Amino acid sequence: MQNGKNIFFLYYIPHTFHKSLAQAVRAKDLDILCSNKKPLRRIFSYIKFSLFTSPYEILLCEGTFLIPALFKILPFKKFKKFIINISGDPKLYYIKTKNMNLFKRFLHLLAIPQVDLFICIGEMERDLLREIFPQAKYIVAYPFIEEERYNKLLNLPVKERFNHNILFVGNGPDHFYKGIDLLINTFKIVKQEFQDAELFILGNWNKDIKEKFYYQGVHFVGFSQIYEYIENCSLYLHLGRGDTFPVSNLEALLGGIPCIVSAYTGTKELIKELRDDFVVPLDPKKAAEKVIEYFQLAEDDKKDLSLRAKELGKRFKKELVLSEFINKWNSVMREL
Image 1 (cartoon, one colour):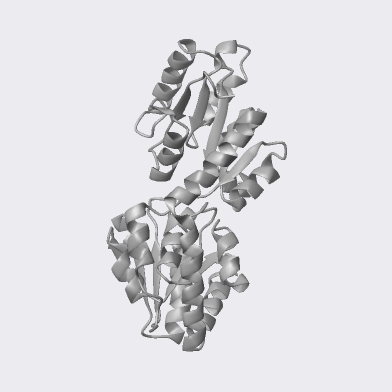
Image 2 (image 1 turned 180 degrees about the horizontal axis):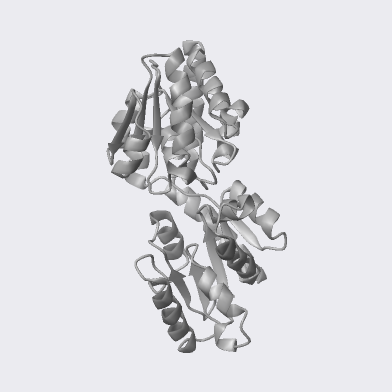
């Protein structure tokens, strides 16, 4: 379908991975819906763009489908663009759980059926989409680990010695989405059992969040190189609420650290291959029980998990991931 047609990448920030997908399909960057523009300006910019382009153009949206999809409902050919959305944010989870402004949720439920194709980042996002709109067309894609980081993590040895330190990597400001409250409350229980336990939180978090979740043994370390923390920790813990497919999980695995994740963290499909019971409910008590159980394993069992974690992480090499995506993209485009 895309032969002879332009593909425009309507980005929000953009995320490095989403930008790579856009580049892979030769999409042209278009900033009219980006995060630094106010809502009214986005709307007027989109109207202007639509009026001066062909209705047959393809829009590749970085979760920015709402305005194009709502305009598509109008009975004007200029607004009947072909919309493809990269679903890699918590929107679908928030729609499912009704953790969204009522009016905003209503608009999204109107807009979703107007999207022609979804690129779901992982199986969890696909399942949420099916639940909300069973008729949706989609392909499932996966993120990759940046090449330089991939090579460095690959060269880290399988762990031989273990401690009670826990690692988490994620950025604010949405601490609910990242499950920071669950993470801290889980750690509090673990800390009672293992007094030497430490929790290292990498990423950008504001002062209010740091003060709100302050607890002995919790370290918000900002933007730091992940390698030293992988070497200094024995477990990665991620209790997201709709966190699509966090690359930090993949990096931890490739670095040889086993991961325990929530049932609403998309990497659960991968972690199940590591150990099925390392996927836990959104419940700090149950998550803590699993962390404690892991820390109590024999050294040889932990070494085995470290080795298996590294093997799982190897799958997310950039060239392999993008090659698989392009094959799926070409296949579905031929059918549309």
